[in-house]
Image (cartoon, rainbow, N blue to C red; front, side, top):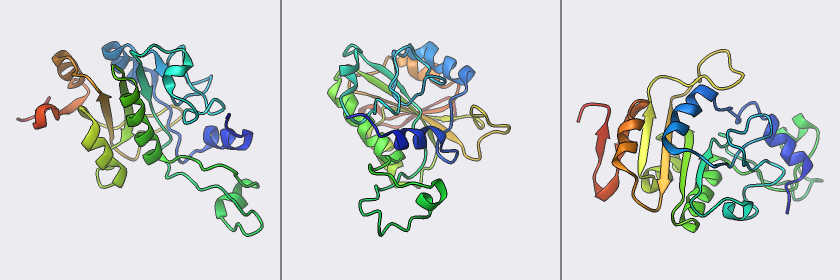
Length: 213
């Protein structure tokens, strides 16, 4: 099922939750992983030739059915908002968000926590796949626990990212989290440390690259 027109437009236009990845920042990470799929993109900001747009809906079918091989190396910079529940009874809906935009939504808008959970599940489906996420470093958030428990590498990005269309750096720090079923090459941990301190949680150990041990 494709995403509704109104929902697709809303996901593209949300100034509060959509933070476009700066190309120079992406290229540094792409040089390490060589991505073949962008799972949260539009035609004007996709970072790979093959991407999944809001109209196609990343949540509707497994990513590997999009023509990507099982060795998926996916990039995800998801919307950072909390999401929004559908207006099942519009006659009783009093949500300020609906009043502001002038219409109701008939499907749930996934929040950042939903994107993370779904992404982790897709990695499990693609047993040899890798998923790399760019996320705000909100370590006190409930969804960050899912990142901590499942990522094999977390890079706390040095400094603040200047997202596409922004005049200034982001009002929050960022992390790059890597999820994989198999083991990552040791070289990846070393290379990622050029972006910031890297936490390696393999073998039930915490090792920090790029900072004091």
